[in-house]
Image (cartoon, rainbow over all chains, first blue to last red; front, top):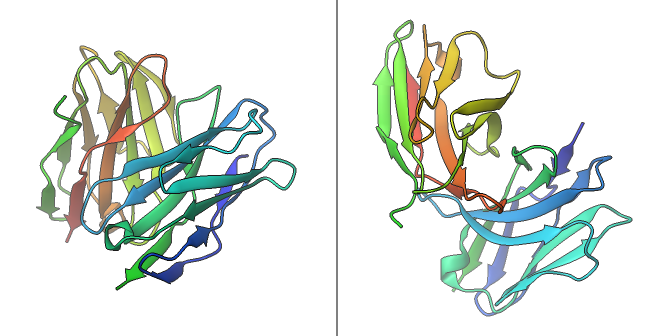
Length: 114
Length: 113
């Protein structure tokens, strides 16, 4: 069975600072994909960043980057220069290459403070 | 590209009633997914379609739930004999052939009284 675990229910960060959200996953699949989604309050979920588990290089999208540790099955999200608009619930998710479904973690609520 | 749309956005019903939700995916997206999200939790997979074929169903999708995508475009999710435990946000997502990025709609919030 595939599982995705986020152990930080809530986090806060000061505007312009850096924050890291943790995620671990468990799967026996080698063809696996990992994602971070952002869900702002009362707004729809949007993709932040994706990582192919067979690639060693960490994905980066502007202020967002991942620290992918394959042996530890860890997939953390680093947000640099935090902005007030980053306030949202963040979900880590995984997908096996054999299926279309995403398996989501429990989510981390991030509050960016001015 | 108008995004994934869902209708209605909110639905309040009484226990035992049937409800139907609609999802319109992004044009030319051949995969369509349904998820259920309860308050403060991550979405849980229900089912997905590739064109009109329903390829996978979760065990969460009891006999009271049925989903269709008759022409490979929009999809409907029906819940029969609703129960209070069905109260949740129902999310639809779609993806383009050859990519795995799922684009989510705004969701339908169901409240069963």
